[in-house]
Length: 370
Image: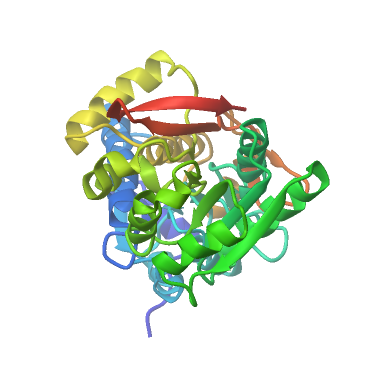
């Protein structure tokens, strides 16, 4: 039987590395493109930490595990990483997967800094072990709802697949829009074809369709079907979860993928640090970095700061969350307790509603910002 390394073993001073476990979706059905961007940000920051002398002279090392968007795989990876003696766990993009990882990290007393998942209920009960960089889903999706109302949309259809994440998003929209005169019409994508979605939009007189579905299936076929239907020439398609952020979206949909507003967690103007990191990420990825790549970089920036100040002791890392004050690529990162959120939360990450410009699909237009 393998015995988990003790904290003292994780703090060896013999020149061995300080290890951070990284949870990333790198194979299907995970959103592989998001995983590659997240990993690029994590790796770039680790390289820069090591170029600057590491953690007290010891190199920082990522121990990467592919979650493939599977909660069970993520929980098992957290178990393995804890046995290996990592100082903390970082990463993950898919909310349902991050929730499984957070529950396991909490049970093991292993610090977990969640990079990119937004589900409000990341853990069932309040925990000291988990912190998060991405904004809670309720905040981001309420900002998206404000954008919809401001654009004149009050009959909004949501094409949704069965999932805790999608159900949570639909509930946030419904609860926020109803008192403000908005109606949410839910379309069950486990029972509808893309063509049937078009008929439902016409029958319900919807002015907007939101894609609460996976990418590329069935998001891409739905977009193609709606764009072809002349009855729906005036309807707005939206994707609050960010499907159009990545290059694959533009590759698969071309002009059909433009003018589809989504949430993005970037400021209007990057700081000098953010601009420098953007250049380095662009070189590493051979394409424009998404906000997910910046989240990866900021994750390591926070953990490196904590590890330098408090050592690799897991309990001391968890105790340090409320004292973090780190200049990240997208602003100063500080964690606090947010009402209704069970983890330490970066309270005010930047939030934008953007789309791809029909005149220049590789350019993003900022439509609304918090």
